[in-house]
Image (cartoon, rainbow, N blue to C red; front, side, top):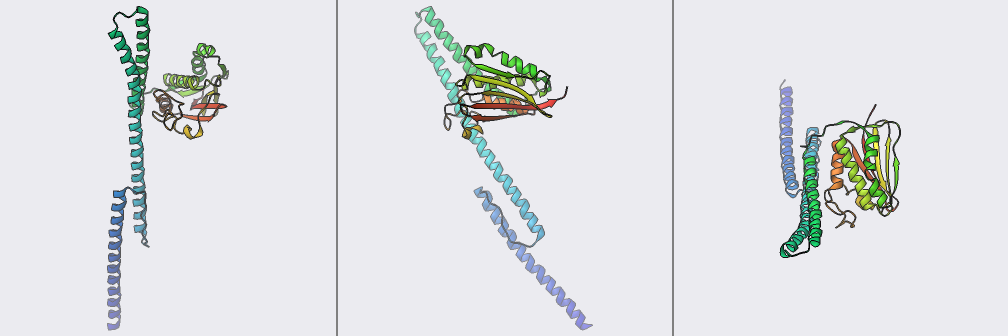
Length: 311
């Protein structure tokens, strides 16, 4: 009996010692864990926690902490990218506003300093003031339109749109401009009705932006096309031209705010740099998507994809 009691006591002592050793080991691991977390957080490095352990719960804890660290790193990265984008946008907007306003001020000074100016010359300068003022207003409106779209404050009622009519009406409004500039126009709109789900006013603006963009920047090829097509779930509108196109290195950036291909940029897009960004936001607000593919001097295509509605 005494022997059995001594064995039980020995086993209990071993268990207590084992638990004590484990507690010491856990405390060391926790101290090291805390130290590593503090270091990674303070330096904002893209590191993961690596600790050797056989404890399942401890392993699970490490995995969750690593997920949090990854989320923190992504948040820092997104914030830095957004901050850089905003700084660039403010800089470009300041430049784009200053340029026409400086010109307007120059014309006004000329008119003010020469009261005896001939009526014809005065009329010519006033016309230039009007044009530059309109350019400034367009830029300001684009900026606020984009701000409203990105804030989510703008309510966009959705409905069924007869795509054949919308596409045909929009491209035909450019007939005189295209004919005057010697464009060869290709229009492919099926005879049977095709319905998409979206906002007619927003879609009208999207198509106007893309057609205007092709006329302004694709005029080297003197060809412009609009194709309406469908599959089982979606409708597609392709706006294409055969101009100088966009290099592959820029394709992923043309929808970014103020990306005008001037600095990394290749003197391709000029002006506010907001047109394609607004276009993309409008399409996404309708639950659709927009894609670009381009082979310079051969074919540049903007494709708008919307949900299809059965008729």
